[in-house]
Amino acid sequence: MKSISIKEIATNVAYFLASMAILLGLWHLISVITKAEIPNPASTWIVFKELVADPFYDYGPNDKGIGIQLLSSLGRVSTGFALGSLIAIPMGLLMGSTQIGMKLLNPIVQILRPVSPLAWFPLGLLAFKASDGATIFIIAITSLWPTVINTAFGVSSIPDDHKNVGKAFGFSKWKYLTKIMLPFALPHIITGLRLSIGIAWVVIVAGEMLSGGVGIGFFVWDSWNGLSLERILVAILIIGTVGLLFDKAFNALQNAFSWEKK
Image 1 (spheres, rainbow, N blue to C red):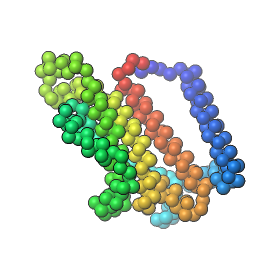
Image 2: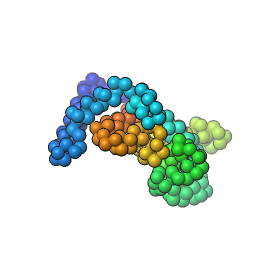
Image 3: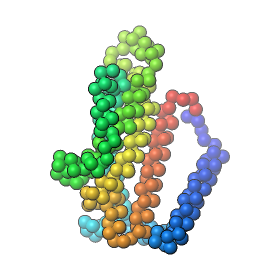
Image 4: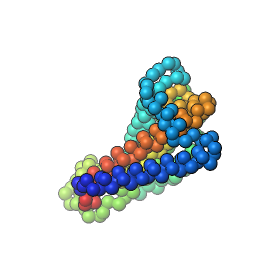
């Protein structure tokens, strides 16, 4: 992998800080235009410091710290994302490697992919009889499609030369899968996973608003019921920051396994 110079790091940090300055400036402008109906960054910062002063307090079912809420959401997202990936990767491999698999499964993907997570929630409740199970279900069912599509594309893009090498050396199906198909498709699979984790993190907020209980989505809804817009804005910033960290982590993983020369 290419090493990053101090100059490049400094440049990236400068661009990031400039981006945050633009965001804060727009936020402050909106607050002024709405006559402080939308809280400004300064008042939101005060509430943020209060929330992170004791993020793991637990005073009952509907009164928990922001840290507990966030960890609960991360747990659901991780479970749903993992389950979705376990379905998506084999499904994508099958679609990309055989015409029969593509013709049989692609219509299913195209029909189910656009369905809103909110439409899946009642079915999740019916199937799992619990809001936690329903939330994990909608994360899995809505986040798996980018991984399916990217995996199928990666496998279908394997050059004939690679396939001929496997035939020339008499590779078994398992050896072809592990030595040629998966290594070549891996960058595409990681790209799909990167898109899927973003969708999973978006879906968790809607799911927890419906299911209630504990989680960052429930925290947003509970803050709205309590008419605390500052708490909502803090939650939005936390949600966005975690999403950014997810994206950066998968981007680093994608670069690590990229076939392009650094």
